[in-house]
Structure formats: structure tokens, C-alpha cells
Picture 1 (cartoon, rainbow, N blue to C red):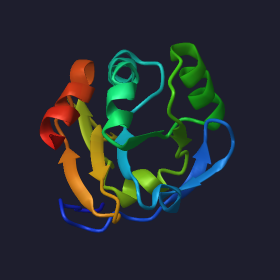
Picture 2 (picture 1 turned 135 degrees about the vertical axis):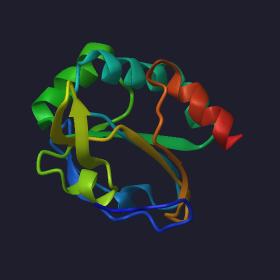
Picture 3 (picture 1 turned 135 degrees about the horizontal axis):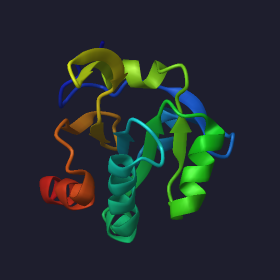
Length: 153
């Protein structure tokens, strides 16, 4: 597991988005990127988080941010999720958890006394130079966009 911190170079990644198209960190070179990792498409917390970002999309874009969501779901499931909630940003299908692991967003979790491996809900704000500017490990799913905008202003 990666132990990234603010100021670190963001790990490069490559994957397939919800449209079946390749996407990489290099695609966002010279741009500010909100890279958010969530456990599972179309579940209550993940839907609230993504909808918060969708609802503030124009404001985030006006401040120069691009957005990319990442989960271990398939491209088809990501596409269905995006279409159902009309997300204006792409979703990355990280079925092998390579991007999740590179960013330290895959790790041990506990629920109902059981330990298992899964997605650690985390958001990274990456600046134009590819450096991690901010890391959110305590994501407010219902108001994540406000959380990001307040921290980045």
C-alpha cells in the first residue's frame, strides 16, 4: 500500500473509463484534477458523493478542476452508474485495483467485526504539475464538493 502525502508526485496510472476509452494521468497534464476513489457504483454513499460533485460540477470547472472517479467496478457498471445519474465526468474502471493500490486507496477494512480488503474512500487533488495538493481521507459523501471547495479556496 502506498503512503502518499501532500506534496508528493501523483502516481501515473492508465485504465479504461466508463466509455471503454483509455485514460491516464498524462491526459490531465497541465490541469487540476480531483481524483476520487469510491467503493461501489450505485450504492448510497457512493451515489451521494458523486452526485455532490455532479451538482457542483460547473463551480468546480469554473475553478479549473477536472474530475475523475475510480472504483473497482467494470466499465459497463461504471457506464450504467454515470448514465443513471447524469454525471458529466468520466469514471475509471479499476477492476484489477492497480490505480487504487498505487494511491493507497485499497486496504484493510472492518465491518460487523469482519476484516476484509476494499476501497478506502479517498480523494486526491492533483495540481497542474502533477503534485498532490490535498488528500481527503474523511470524505463527507453528502457534501464532498463543498468540502473540496472550502479546502482549496
